[in-house]
Figure 1 (spheres, one colour):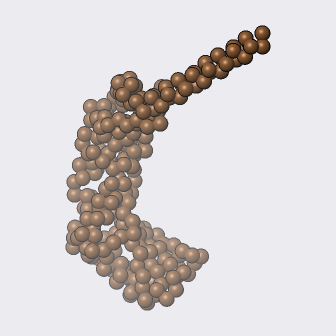
Figure 2: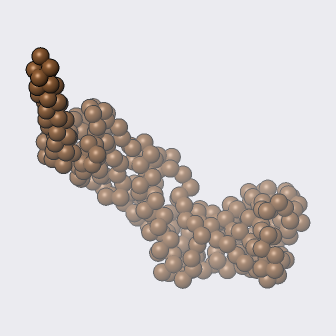
Figure 3: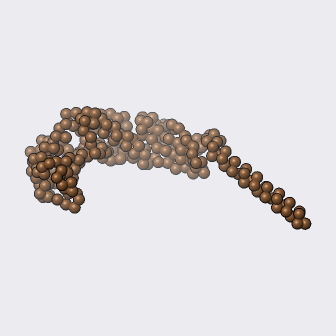
Amino acid sequence: MVISLNKNQLIYGRAIFILIITVLFGLIIINEKGDKIFLPKATNNIKNYISENYTEIKDTIEIKNIKYKNMTFTAKIVSKENKNLYFYITYKKRQIKDTYKKDFLEGNSLLNYLNNKIENEIYKKTNIKYNKVNAISTLDKYTNNVQKEIINENNLLTLKYYYLEKEIIIDNWEKETITNEIIKYIKINEENQINPKYYIFTIIDKNDKTKVLEISNINNTFITNNNKKQIIEDILNDNNSNLINDNNIKYEYLNGGK
């Protein structure tokens, strides 16, 4: 009786061992070959998802590629108008998610690419490196005409959909020096047909790095503004004058004040 029991236990043990090995091999095969096994079904589900959820744009986009990793299919959905405008659809365990709103509708993928492109083009033309180049808004906030220009990458440097940030280190903390430095950068850009919507200049005192002034919403009209030096003087005196407000210029002393 004891011998029979031990034999049964041995049989059960072997069966369980074989079952575990079979399951493990099955998981390995699925993980390594799952893309080939389930790709047709995943592709079909992704296509149906696009047809059901993105009817208005389905003819303007295409599935560029589908990758498989960790039992998840990830499809890159690319605009036919610009390959840098895209979003991702993930398919896992019959659940589908996408990054459409952030990457495609709001244009995150394209705008990030264009920020770098504009930064490089400005450097090539002027030999000046800006601290930041950024779109003023998300793609969906622009009008259809401007969206089209952005997507087609037409005359980007003169299309006022972006702004520039620049740090300026100065020796002399007074209105003449600061005004001239600001004008210098704007003029160089104008001469090279670079026209952002506005600038943000961060003025840093070379003799006291904690003395930092940020002046924003300055545009090309600052050059011809007869009151430009008075505006800078009012800012240096921390006088939020009507002159500053009328020209819609913003400023802020960083690091705790003047």
